[in-house]
Every structure is written in C-alpha cells, then in structure tokens.
Image 1 (tube, rainbow, N blue to C red):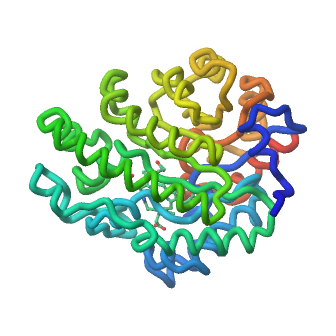
Image 2 (cartoon, rainbow, N blue to C red):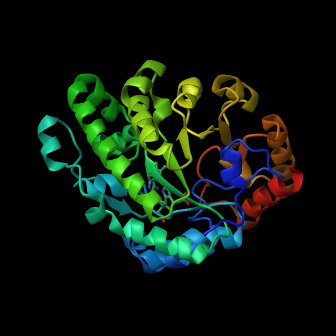
Length: 341
Ligand code: 1CP
C-alpha cells in the first residue's frame, strides 16, 4: 500500500521536501488523557501484548497531535523478556528486573529466542496498526541498542549512571561481549520480523550510549549497532538515536544509517559538521521546553528549524516527551513545525 504522507521517508532518502516532517519520541504515552484511560484499565505488558490496545495507543498521537509518523507502542524491554529475564513495570517506579545478570553463570538463564514464538504479538500488532493507519503516515518500528539493554539486564532497574552495568563490562569484558552478541542476534531477527510485518522505518534507541567514553562507546555499543544497521539498511531506512553520544556522529554516519538522532546539548551546525552531508539529522528540541508558554515554543521551534537549515532534517524532541506536558503544548510544537517550514 502506498503511503500518503511520506515526508519522513523522503527526508531519510535525502530528497528535498515541501516542509520539514515532525514526530515526537515517546509520543504514545502518559501526557495523553486518552492513554491514561487505557493505563487505568490494563497492565503495561497487557497493553503491549494485545494488538488491539497497542494499535489504539499507537494511533492516538497521529489523531490527536497530527504527527507525520506513528511509532509502535511497545517497549525496549520486551527483548530482555523474550530472552528469558523477568521484567516488571512498576507504574510509578519504572522497570524492574528482579534477577539481573551478574556473571557468566547467569548467561545460562538467557537465550537467543525464536522471535516468531516469543515476540509474535509485536508482529501481530504491527500488521493491525498498518491496516488501521491505512497509509496515512509511515510506521516506525524500534528496538533498544544492545548496550542500553545490557544496562537494564545487569543493573536490574533504571539509573542515572548505570555504574553496575559499567563495572560488569570493565571487570568481566568477555561475559559482557557474549551477552551483547546474544542481544544483537535477537535484535536483528526481531527487527527483520518487524519489517516483514510492515514497519516502514526502524529506530534504534541507545538511551545510555552517552554514558560511555568515545572508546568504550565503540567497544560496548557501536560495534553491535553497526551489525544491526548492516543487517537492515538495504531493507528499510534506519535511524540511530544514541543520546549524549554526539562525539560518535561521524562513526554513526559511517554505519550507513539513514538518520541520526541528536539531543539538545549539541548545536545543529556542529552535529552536521560531525555527521557529514549524507545523513538525515533528527531532533533536537529540549523536551522540558515544551512546558514553556505556547508563544515561546513557537519562537524556539523557528530557531531550531533555522539552525538545521531545512534540508535532511526531521523535527523531533531531543529525548522522550515528559508526562506533565499539556497536550496543547505538544500540538503547538507539531503545528509550529508545519507552519514555519
Ligand atoms: O504507562 C506507563 O506508566 C509506562 C511508561 C512507559 C511507556 C509509555 C514505558 C515504561 N514504556 C513506554 C512506551 C515506550 N517505551 C515507547 C512507545 C512508543 C513511543 O511513543 O515512543 C518507546 C519507544 C519506549 C522506549 C524505551 N523504553 C526507552 C528508549 C527511549 C527513551 O526514552 O530513552 C527506554 C530507555 C525504555 C525503558 C523504560 N520503559 C518504561 C520506562 C518508564 C522506561 C525508562 C526507565 C528509565 O528511566 O530508566
């Protein structure tokens, strides 16, 4: 089926478009009252595993805020879950993995699963979402980068520093690399399944890539991301979002990814210098700035669009939208991009 609004696809291919496309990371979530209604009624993984619910949540921001792409409602932690680890989502605390990986013996508790068996519900959801979208906008599928998934699989919960995950890598590097390779192999099969089910674009979230030094980012993150991009890039446009890892933009561009996400801590001009001319940049509005009054949001969007120069740019936030953002502020962000560009 052809896609009516294919702005993002054309921008990722490097084509000049009539305006800058826009979507928001974590756009399907807690700032939407319609999401909160479903959150009251169903558990987190129930929402992920029930295709009709995942579809309804995925479509909400397309209908309510008018973004140029849908992103699958799921979570990066469904992969560790499919590999055999228990993952709980405590509604106010975030994810908890009660039995994290601490040493080589613990690797016996994880496997590279048959994704068609363990993650078929995601593929079912994608098929239903594509049907319901009916070609309105492209659908973004996603997975966590191996390093970011290792962070949760070893630390067992969210963290600002992921010090235990780092200590695991620096004291038991061989075990860390075995685990990273298992995650990579699972992720490649998983993302190929998403593409086969109908995902039009794939984004890799390396939310904690910026916690590593440039050398360690290459060792523990990028070499695995590179394998994933190599396995996918001829089938589907791919975007790498490695938060805080601006120092590796040149190397990330060299993977052949079509797009690179950047956060608000780097100037678009500098990011372009590092990344080179042949990749699309995505970002980089400070998500907290959506709390500002609407006229300020409009002005700052204009400044952002000018800084990116109107070519090979997908407007987005520099990280996920925060739960306390009023819906009309999110809509103002999207509308301003559409107006100014
Ligand atoms: O309703 C709730 O209370 C659960 C909150 C929630 C939601 C809405 C979680 C738990 N996950 C999600 C959905 C989700 N997660 C999406 C949906 C599609 C979208 O609209 O974007 C996506 C893409 C993710 C990806 C994800 N999960 C990331 C990468 C992106 C990022 O924000 O950095 C990470 C790090 C996670 C882990 C996770 N899952 C949930 C939470 C609260 C967290 C973060 C925990 C932490 O701070 O460490």
